[in-house]
Figure 1 (spheres, rainbow, N blue to C red):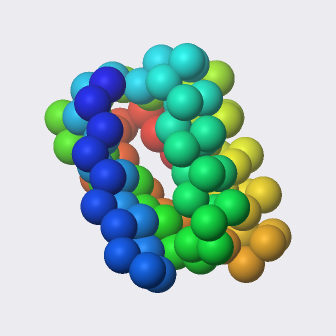
Figure 2: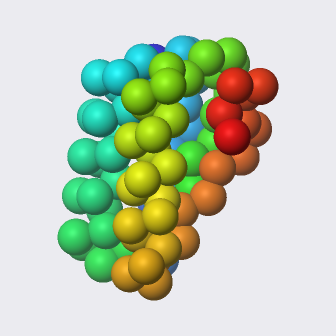
Figure 3: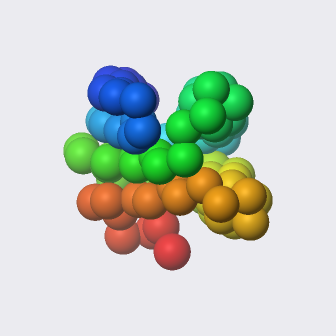
Length: 85
């Protein structure tokens, strides 16, 4: 997995290339939480050339999205692979 991050004062965008396995999802969640602690309220994950996300990775990312949503933080996914709900 390769991550490129673009940010401004209000939004952070993560461009992901490559498959996402359990440890990659956990690392990505940590990166996102770090941005939320900085006060960012709008985050986007753009998946390109990502064909697989492990089941545990999906659960990790979906759980993070739900938790952040309850805190008023928007986490969106674009370009989802076939196995991501």
